[in-house]
Image 1 (tube, rainbow, N blue to C red):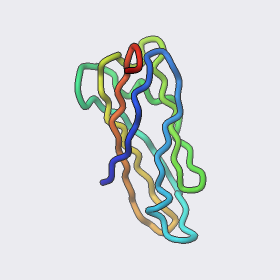
Image 2 (cartoon, helix red, strand yellow):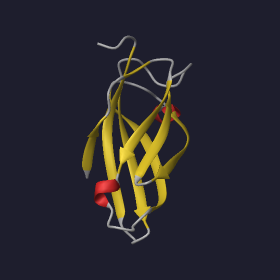
Image 3 (cartoon, helix red, strand yellow):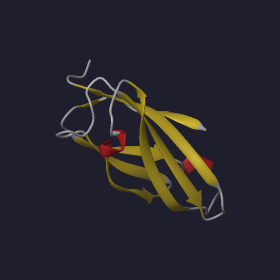
Image 4 (cartoon, rainbow, N blue to C red):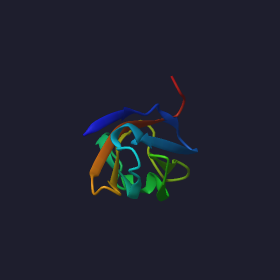
Length: 107
């Protein structure tokens, strides 16, 4: 599984996070299904999946997921592991993951 770099985001924002699978796809191969999940990598959040807003979308080999840290969604100081999983038109199952930290102020 490959990792992507996800910059930290502020608490109380909504932001799209892209996962670029394009270099893993053959010519003409497309993404058929996509899902992004969230789990706690470090820190404490009893409901890490609450930062996932809606369903992931795919276009031109890039999966995009809206992350929502407003209200009670997400905890400042917690680092989440985001995992994007796709199946392709060629029957491949591919994964990309990255670590996302929520901050009160960007460093």
